[in-house]
Amino acid sequence: MKFKIPPKRFHPKGLSILYEDHDILVADKVSGLLTVSTEKVREKTAHYLLNEYVRKGNQKSRNRVFIVHRLDRDTSGIIVFAKNERTKRFLQEEWQGFNKKYYAVVHGTLAKKEGLITSYLAENRAHIMYSVDDPKKGKLARTGYKVLRESKNLSLLEIELFTGKKNQIRVHFSEKGCPVIGDKKYGKKEKGIKRLALHSASLTILHPDSKEKMTFETAVPAYFNSLVNG
Image 1 (cartoon, one colour):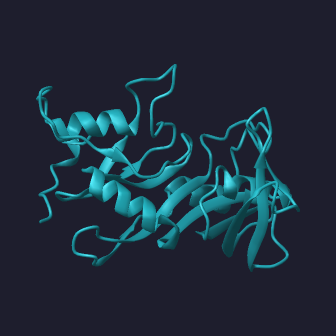
Image 2 (cartoon, rainbow, N blue to C red; image 1 turned 30 degrees about the vertical axis):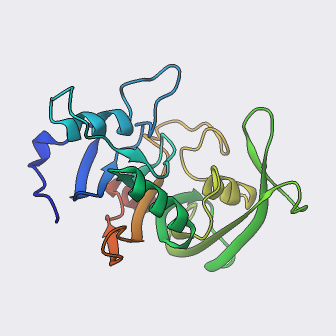
């Protein structure tokens, strides 16, 4: 049974609730909000805020949300949480088979307007991901893309994530010479850029209970259009 979504003013700060029932909670996260806590940040995270939300102010409530997957702090968009252990296990076991699409604005233009980037990703001691040729030294990463619009120096892409490796999209386009706008880790520091131009746009899952296919979608962030149109 789907819950009635409360008015936006009651949503946790930085999150818009897109869907909620007894098993799952789907939200649209703003750029800049962590998914889970770190040593430095405990409370300003999607996980913490949604736990507060499902407890509805009752600290003794046993209601809670469970982490299924993560979005980078500076990536916005759709994120799903489980509301029980059984749902968490189901979603994580099925995760690779779910359809995940992103929007991104990258520097430059791509010679091929539609394609597939495949590499093996490894991580160095500084926690920087990079591609290697040897399958034994990295994990397979596959990123599909299609150019939606381009200007002289920028491209708006629709990206399909076939594997979900750490920083995968950011690494693949950086290594193609087209880093994501606002990516300080794999791109370059830029003046006047408000945020990382990467957005989790669409997610199709199987509902853990009914096994019904469900698709959640969001629009291209207005900021992305303003970058390309600018």
